[in-house]
Structure formats: structure tokens, C-alpha cells
Image 1 (tube, rainbow, N blue to C red):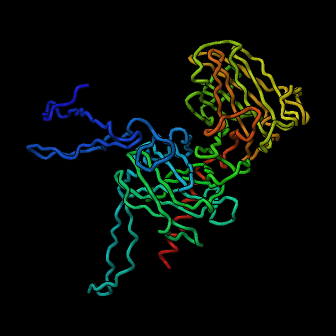
Image 2: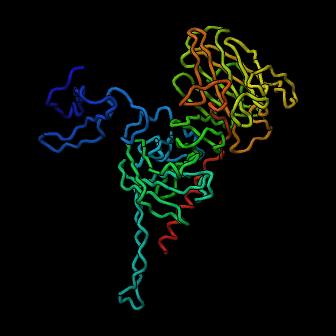
Image 3: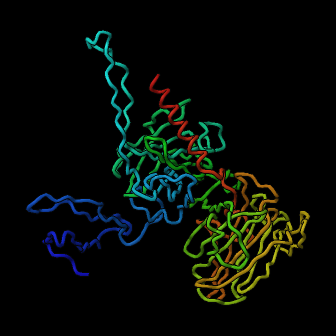
Length: 494
């Protein structure tokens, strides 16, 4: 594309123009952030420059997270917030969020549907001055009214060590740190770190980095590795009215964490150990095992998307429904293709044991092959029954594959073969992995861990499948807002 001339003419008939520039950056190291913006205009009359400049990484995205206002390094770590039970403005509606960690600290990411920190005008209250008896004036002034601004706030509540009983209960975690970022008109106006000390107290000793673009925010908090263990985060947005959005719990483990599978609740990680998480949300629509992942019955399902596959998962009537589209398998190879899903029902890791299950279906097939571990690290056939014993699989499990633009695999698996219970509760989870074999080129597509190769015999490399910590997002919103407002009121009185 040719570059633009140095002079652009605007008129009533042509009020807009696109300026094309050519940037040479061959001497920069690969991964260096580069920015092109319009800093000024020479014109015969006033001109307003709006919008942000163009920012990108030069050449390629380098490994790891960098706080630079560019978000390509979060691609594999972000998770969708799902549908909100109470509609909020786009600037407050959390779309995706993510967390990670390395020896330097904990990292967080948040993206809104609209302009993050867009703000909204706040009403100003005018109170008449009371008159003294006799109408002589000279009223005694009352206490000043609290200042109300149109700012919007994004908060990240952090439970640095979820195994320690420190912090205050916020949205299902015991938060001991809070990052608060305020803004208006798309710009950050204030950023603060708070530490819980029987109340939120500003903590300037922890280094906080924050950067944003129009819709997204990323940051890092230099929590020492010695303080971090199965770190949990909850993300919240709100405005001066208290309206906003809040996420489910997200876990990010620091590199000092070992490979035990005991971290609580929801997790989705990229920096070691990289375990992924898929939520099984309640399904309101009816489903038929026909291999169609675009079935409207999956409208409320939890989702996970990566380059080689997309997964939907939900639950209804004692069964978990899982539909997988192998995005890179665009040839129909019949029985040469296959998908296998694995469940570590007690989430214990190690090698396949009698408590573990896996189910396979081939391409162009409706034949489900059930297996269980044999306590010797091997998979063996699993007998089926309508009322299964401890070493049997449910007879009503089913699977079907189909081919459209890509190969699709749909599974219907009973709760007993997923979590070993007929009544899973909020926060219940099992180890979970997906292996898809593409018969056309012999490739295996894997889900379960973003950092190492997922293996069907190595349960410690698997991710997790579970129930959200709370089904209704509106409940945590009220709890979080009430908590913050209570503290501020007490602080003002003190």
C-alpha cells in the first residue's frame, strides 16, 4: 500500500481522510513494542485529534507477560466471563480476564465489552442553606457532602496464599491484597495497592505496574514468591452507583508451587504449571447426541477456545455434555480420526487408577468406548450398568461424531463417571484432558495444559473440569459492593 502525501485536504464534502505511513524498524529486537500516533496537525482552523495510536510488537510476540498495553501475550491465558445475570453498561461488562505468575510477581488482565473506565456523569446535589429563626441568615454550615465523581473502578482481589487463613472474604476467596484502578473517559486517574489489616490499608511497598488500551487493562503486582501459593483472584468493576460486574475465581500458581493437584476451585494457567480449566454451566436447552457443537442447547455452556480446538461443556439431568470441534482437522478421515476425553474423578493425579475414566469415539461413529484405570497405570475396558458399581461405567453414556467444516465430537457422560457423585456442589472439580487424533496427518491435538504435553497416562499433566464456585454472578456483586462501601464509610468516620 502506498504511503499518504504529507498534506491531507479536508472539506465539508470530505471531512475524513486515512493517513498511511511506512515505518522501518529493522534494527529493533524482535518483540519490541512500537507505536505510531498522530501528535499534531498544521491547519488554518482548530482541529481535534481523537483516538489512540497504533501499537504492536515488532516481528513477533516474545514469551511471557509484559506490562506494555499490548495484549497478544495474553491470548492463551484469557478466559471468557460468560453471560451476566444483570445487564450492565459495556464499560463495566467484563468480557475476558486472565492471570499468570512468574518469580517477579503475579499478573492480571481484564477486558471490557466497551471502553474500560469510560465513566458516566455523576449528579451534583444542591442542598439549600437553612435559615436561622427570624430570617436573619447566618446559618450554621453542616458537614460537607461526600464527593461523587463519574469515575469507574476496576479492582483485582488477590488471595496470595489460599492455604493460609489470612485476609477478608470477598467473592469466595480470602483476599489479602486489592489492586484498585480508577479512571474516566478511558484514561486511568488513580492506581493503588491495598493490604488487608483488619481493613484495607494502602501499601506503597509493593511495586504495581498497570497499562491499558481502550478496552483492556493489564498489570503486575510484585508479591514475593515466598508469599504465593495457589494464588486466587477475583475481578470486579463498578461505578459511583455501585453497579458493575464480577468474575468467578481464577487461580494462578507461582513457579515455586509443586505439581500436587490440590489447588482449590477454578484455575486457568499459562506460566508454570499451566493447568487449564473448563466450567460446566447449567444448560437450559435440550440436547441430542448428534455431534453438532452449534446446537442451541449449548447457549449457556462453559467454553474453552484454542488454536486447534474449541470445547463447550454444560450439565443437565445428571449428565455432563461436552462438544469438541477440532478446528485444525478439516478433512473427514472416518474411523482414522478419534477423540478421547479423560476424567480423574478424585483429582489425585499420578497414573491411571480404578477411580479414573476415559471415553473414546471415532470419526463418523456413534460407538462410545468406555475404559477405566486398573491401578497398574493402564486403561482397560469398563463394563456398563444402569446402576454402576465402583468399577463400572454408566450405561446411558453416549457419544457421536460428525463432520462439517471440521471434525466434531459430542459426549454425554453421567455425573458418576465425571465426579463420582450424583449431586456435585459448587466448586466440585475433576482432572480432565482431551486428546484428538487427526488421521490425515497423524497429529494429536491436546487440551489440559498450556505449558507441557498432555499425556493420557500422566494425570498430573491434565487440566480440570468443574462447577463454578457460584452460579449466580449477581450475588457476589452485591457482596463485593457492600464490603467496599462499608469500609469507606468507616474510614471517613474514623
